[in-house]
Length: 334
Image (cartoon, rainbow, N blue to C red; front, top):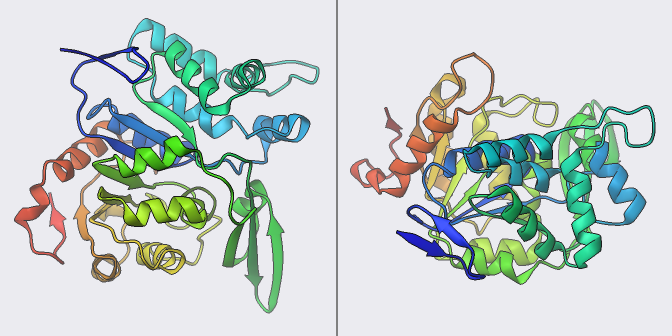
């Protein structure tokens, strides 16, 4: 059966449930590569706070949204054909130059060029998606670029660090984080996608700089709280990163609840091989209304990377409603 999207472009295969995935960077990329095995009705809502590398340079020079995480999301949605895979590689290719283009991702330049040509951020991303044959849509989480500011404690010293790239690597324990501006505008298509979704998925990713920022945007948080969609949280495979060095797996959920106390979850996906205290994780998840789904979702090479097929199988089970077979606060082991 053939389907057409709202603009008349063909969508091949079964559409599936409507899913919105929120995040940024490699974490969101892992979720999208899994979801594309399940549904074609897929929207990625991507953080726009990157201030490092190629994205940071373009953002600074042209006062635009940082395109890097948007580019990665689009590349993750490329169709599995010679056309799609070739364009995926083109988007991710970084220029090797002895001049000012050194290190720029070619996809960042393509996106930036379309933004200048069309004068519309969302329309530009849609056109890139059509070029790539993307199996889904990519939208920015806010209509303006954001800055992330965090208070970090080292011993008795508390200092303020600003900028996503700096917060992600700065030593110390994060005590508080916020976005600037604090109430940025959000594109209507983002809100409509969340309210029209069957499932909304957060994580995995850098907790303070990719996952939590979505809950700090007031309009976005309201949509996530009030949508009729089911809500899933995918936990990281490496709990102790530069941002979260002192945090347990359960602490990640408690931080989420702290910044969005009115947010309820339906399911938390965690890998038991990297979960330090399963009982504590279940307790933290239950406080947000969620069941814990314990499955091995990491790749077989021992690296902290999600395997797209394993993660897709877990999400498909959740979507199909198999969680109803277990008690409300019991983990589902498989």
